[in-house]
Length: 221
Length: 221
Image (cartoon, rainbow over all chains, first blue to last red; front, side):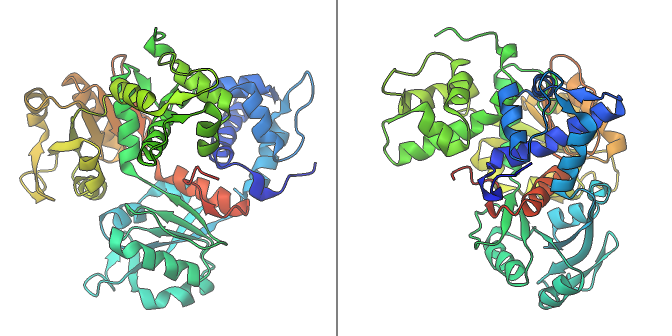
């Protein structure tokens, strides 16, 4: 069960891990005991070779002629991905997107707890939004340590985003989700992901152009 | 240059089209004339076999030993995906997320014009947000026809989302982008995509768990 060096895991594989885990959880609910790479691939629109390659980064799970044990693979993925833990999360930027995310119920269900909200605008600091008191940026370093904040969500305007990312990184936050429409420069020890609403709309438009009906997110064919 | 039946194009391929187009546009800026499936795959974290398979859905572009002509492939993809056109778009739900999207500048740059905003709340109807007057739902059918609205963005609470999607579909809108945390039932002739903020945060958390630093969105290794 040797795992290859973690920095060798390709980013598209990381993105597919959520899909594998979700499909395995569905199969568990259906009380399915084993699943082949072909079944898993078919459900997710991937080749069986791709499935085997992705999962091989995390160990040897497959049993020739049987496939994967659903419970074994689910347990191992959850362990690797730390889905059991709670991720203390901060939001920086209490504007429209930030406020929407403060009230986003799915975060809590997935183990993401919004434990602090920051803004630099004196008119907003001290206000309570969706049960969260907005704090000044100067409180950020101490609160990151006190609350063991692991993820920071950046929802400030584009021209402020880099400074906010730097403040989060300086405070020791290892993961940043960026909603600002700008590419952030980050240093070595930080993970970063971005949300660009125009990409989702573009993919939908392509789907309409191609005359493809149904859900783009419905990976089952 | 026969294109296979369009409903046979797998959804993951549709999602990758944006990536191909973006990479080709970068290569055009760099004045690169040709690109191999291996180069394209390497840039996007895909196998060259996957690239060839994806592009083959849209015709025979590759030249053995040369690869793809960047300008030819770019032009053909833009043509197929109709990136030249303007997509008139409506937002239904003038709450936090809806308001944030009304002000989202990248939409305009990508050819998405927000031409109408609707809400059912009498307290919100008539208000102007980010330059858009909020209209009652009863105006929706006429406006969809008058303004040739092709895409509808659903930013209402979960319990109202299905009724809103039905209203958009009844009015003849062929594409729906759903921000509500609920799975929509849609009929045959409609394309649908969803945005779930918790998926982005989950993928970031996985990246942190795996000790993978850098940008999840940076497909170049």
